[in-house]
Amino acid sequence: MSLTARKIPEWKIKVVEELVNLIKTSKAFAIADITGIPANHIQMLRKKLYGKAELRVVKPRLLEIALKKAGLNPEPFKEYLTGQILVVFTNMNAFELAMLMDTHVTKSYFKPGEKTDREIIIPEGNTGIPPGPMLSVFGRLKIPTKVQGNVVYVAKDTVVAKPGEVVSGDLASLLQKLGLALKEIRLRPKIAYEGIVIPGDKLILNLDEYRNNIMAAHLDALKIAVEVALPEPEVLPLVISRAHRHALSLAVETGFITPETAEMVFLSAVAKANALAVEVARYAPELGIEVKQAPAPVKQEGEKKEKGEEEKKEESKELSEEALSEGFSALFG
Image (cartoon, rainbow, N blue to C red; front, top):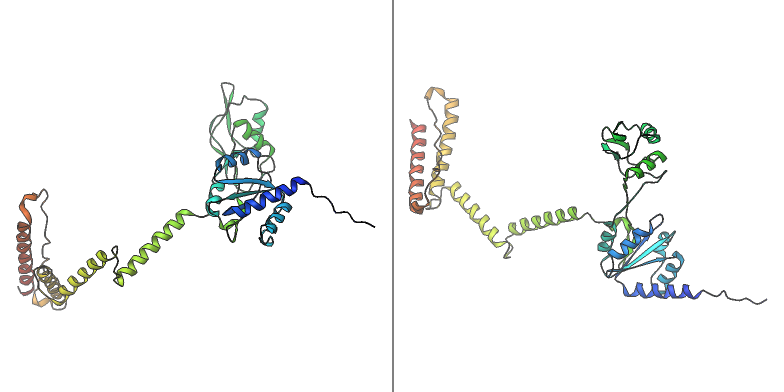
């Protein structure tokens, strides 16, 4: 009994060879299920990705053979090699490709029996539909209407379906008559490969979330760098400013007087004296101590810039002396 090998059609051999070449020469590729996806959506996607990617509609078995011939283990891909599949080969990274595919959206009409993924609202206004049999359709869908000038008007915005509900025949028919193509069609990869296998649910990134995470990480890194005084051009001005503030605070706290700290030291002393006087007055009212708040320096509106820095310093000194005088007089009568 002689055994004869089944001859493999030439077109299948050519398809596998082409797929092997694309797998080897592309940086990444993605596999998407195109079951139920209109042909015009794929054609428009092909135009959008022209020059950036190669699209091939292939049989799952031929792609499995091509993966093996290209030196890849087909096992991680097997569960995705079912139905009608589209393979997109590119030299972009897999995440960029997935985002381009996900943002390519076309609109279509809902068919009877399909589930909605969003709320469907029939808007208020002129429908352009003459009264007649369609009035009963509006009635069955519980859409309030009125007839004006031989045209049906919807009385108010009406929700006719919520996410997850099945589209009825009446609703599908009405949406078509109103020209409401509300069904969004987008092609999302089931899996991608770029040196490693990437599941489809990991391919679509929330860019705003990543941007916020990076900004938060940068801020945290900057805080640590300032804390340890990392000698970097971006960090040093912040380190110096922080060190100056701490030195100034320490000088005021310890009463170390310099031309820069004198005013703050005296004001701090007045504040502490006032605080002490308040406590004494509370526990020993018979002493008759009255505490007056030292007036804060007030900037004059419309103050002319010509006065110069020296006048401002003199003003500050006078205010400080007044504050100090009033503070001590309040404490000691």
